[in-house]
Length: 252
Figure 1 (cartoon, rainbow, N blue to C red):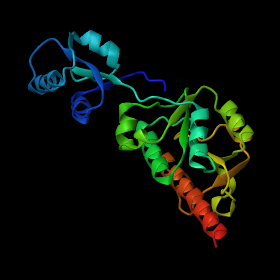
Figure 2: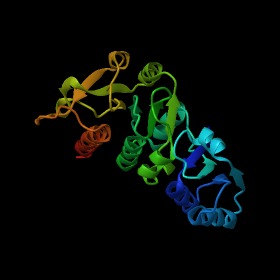
Figure 3: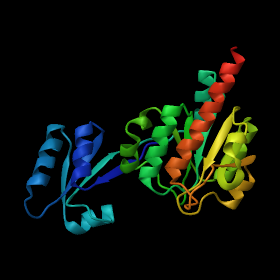
């Protein structure tokens, strides 16, 4: 599992990661001036035997590229798995693979919410793109509310190639998009890779062309699109509903 350094930036976020017990490599704090809040964070880090580095404002700015509030924690990142490891997880459980593919999800809160839903629904793994997409940041992990401990996430450079790989493994690639057939009339009971598009551009043409079918959610109001995490949740649970119905029918 590949693991990288993750920077947690800002006083509240650093306090949360220190309290959570997540592995923290070091704490970088502003060297100038005295601040009670930062002093309390330093004491927390010292109690956990975490090294403290004092840096000037320019040094912190280079790390954070934003408002660091005088403190940055360097932490163990959340590791990625391979696509094969996700498929192996399904095989080990003796289940048809259920994989989620996310294209260009850029909001870490959306990513975290989708991963949390995926965990509750028994999805075997989530695949995200490396380009124009958010990774496993602290904000995504916080929104996932512990689900990252149970849902493996793969990060790939080419989603089209990954979709073709999954199809070769026997999965049906289904993308959720507004020009598809109504999701409730589609058979989604077999090995499946569900593709969810990003907040701004949806699913790209090439990705859609490589999918086996396109499904849509019914939209009856004036607004023509849903939040990505909401659309993912509804679609995921329609697959769960159909799978459970199939199992129930087969055991009668």
